[in-house]
Image (cartoon, rainbow, N blue to C red; front, top):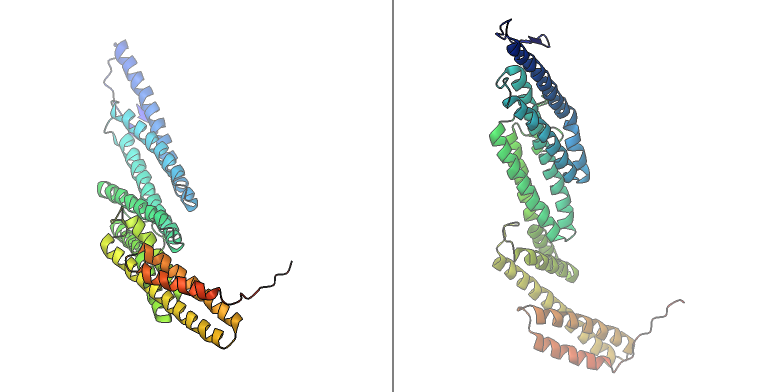
Length: 338
């Protein structure tokens, strides 16, 4: 019996044995069915490689995973069919399926690495926008994906290259795309994810430092908000960002103290200016300055009641005094066009 002019089996079937002849015919039919199944699986995998990658650009991992599962089922069914046949171990059946398996898994690994790159990009956007919770989920998902890739790499021994069975890294951004091996690519991807996890605290620290150097109350308030948002996430999960909640709490309190002190300083200066303006018979200027003092005292008092760094009582007393003084001067009217 010759199949595709490439593989020959010799069946010892006696010419007088009808049952043996029927058995031989069934073997031929089985071989043809298996060849078709193996060929269908191999062609499906080779044709669908790009289909696994394409949805990730839009963040559609579910579609990629669904397509992979369908292809995985096709290859597995073909493998089971061969294993349960008299042709188990025959290279003509085994080798194409081995290639299809490696091709599918290498394509999936490439898809996962692209997913990690996409997660890192969107995670950075979310973190920079102050959405720490979504950023944390992106980081955790990226780490889980890298763990999956590592496990598959250990069990398959992939190569890197343009071969149909290789993992193609050249479409990934540097330094991951420049890696000489899959192991190196995974390590570099992990380093980039870890760097992303450090970004929120580094960004908050930088903003706080600039604000202190320039005396920017807005910058300090932004830094305080970033620290507090980060603390809310870290309080239930220290692992994602690698931060100790107690040390982060200290940062929050220190920044709150800086905001309170700066606002009190601004309020005191504004109140002093208002007093001088009132004595110089400039009631409108005095009213503007008192309004500024009240606004800063109110915010300082609000923060002092929330954070341990503040002392609400003296700030509240100063607020009451300035509010009382403000009632003695006219309020500057602002004309609005109708």
